[in-house]
Length: 249
Length: 210
Image 1: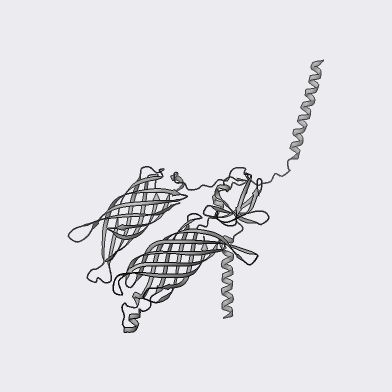
Image 2: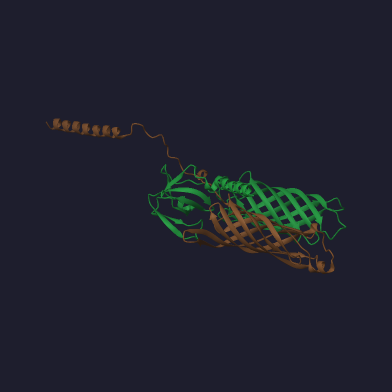
């Protein structure tokens, strides 16, 4: 038992030591303060108190980054956090301003990927969906999405592949068109034993708008019209709307 | 005469200035250091905006007793204020009071497995600091979460709305502790009439940033 505890303890210690957050032997990112002062906070957020101030000419070392905040360390071993906007005003050893490439909404070259979560309704039934987008050009993107529709009588899952075109990539409110196809799986509720699971092909067309909020997130709204090819007498047609939050990288 | 004086002065000036440049050349180190100042860019910085949490706790399932709950959560921090997360949890429903009194079974044992997933948005409302003794201070966050998802229970997937609050203590830059209380609400018609089932989750978690 004691051996077992000892080996578990050893494993834990190795894990902690091997943790990337603890690694100290990275290339040093040292910068010099060029503004009159640089405020240090105790944590990565404006709600944390200011604990130290570096003067013009002081050198600080940059550590990890969390959201818009960078960890600082000075030669005396003090630690704190500074906002990226303040760090971008410092100079590195070459004498130039620190150059960080932030992904920007109006610069498609700096951002190619998007990930989003959406809530909506398919034929007046609540749905949840997740989507991933890759922009091949400033105007044209490929998308994969999965939607779960949870109705009173059945559960429907939609898996879609689509092409999206936007005419105005730099607009803060950017409309788009989308066209695609996929699979529709319908599973009736457990209490309805008369029906079997169904799986059908579908195509859809849609319009939408992406509304840039701030940082790297935006609101995305979709309106889609599906044509579902069933093996029954007639095909089905359903309408879906979705709204959600997306992030770009 | 004037020309000669001028010439002498100019020669002197030339000598003096030539001398100083020679002196400056002698000031240079014999072996110049082989270090080129490197520019600082984002490739040197390790970003830690993702957080994975493993949690365990209790889930009170309406009509079906309370159960041990465990699960995982993946969080992406959008900014210091906002984050999005995907959450997955597992529990097991017990018996309703009717089942115990009538010695009957409303649902099969396999249908008592309670699993949920949810996609949530979180808001760090109150960042702060907590003090452990005199020497140590840890950063903390009080946050609110809300989201939608699905619950698999009693044979069906049910559209579920959840909301709650949590407290995070950042023990290290790469690790935090979480305490969460969440309400999960979905419609169910297993025990007679259709009603909204409200299920309370209380959990403790450990998270790692990467």
